[in-house]
Image (cartoon, rainbow, N blue to C red):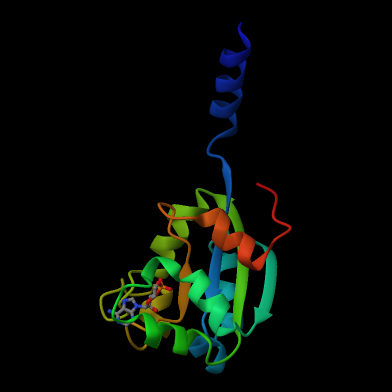
Length: 153
Ligand code: CMP
């Protein structure tokens, strides 16, 4: 058996890879005392919390975090909202965590998010939508590193 065959077999028998991802509990949800309930639901769904940090972002930090939206007409309002109070950054670990957490929180607009999803239950508008989760097609490592610089790759 070649080395690469052995590696493939090991991956097959171990199942999907453990992944890390970032979730933010945004200032609206923190203000409404939803932090504990959101963490409880995540843990109940099998996500393991491996990092937790409460922080109020500066304007610079918020603009850096959401740089991908800099040209959008909602950018200024988004930065104002996300710096309006403390948020809670959560590092999560699970099999297939990056895709799975996106389903778990629901789509951006709470009015269109699936019933029972975090945004459907706790979001109140497309801006104040309770949580953010890293988009797997964008820069998960950069987002994780902004809050948890000690996260190994
Ligand atoms: P999030 O997943 O954190 O990514 C970008 C954020 O911008 C989004 O959640 C919302 O909070 C906000 N957002 C996205 N679209 C709009 C919009 N059309 N109007 C206002 N805010 C928006």
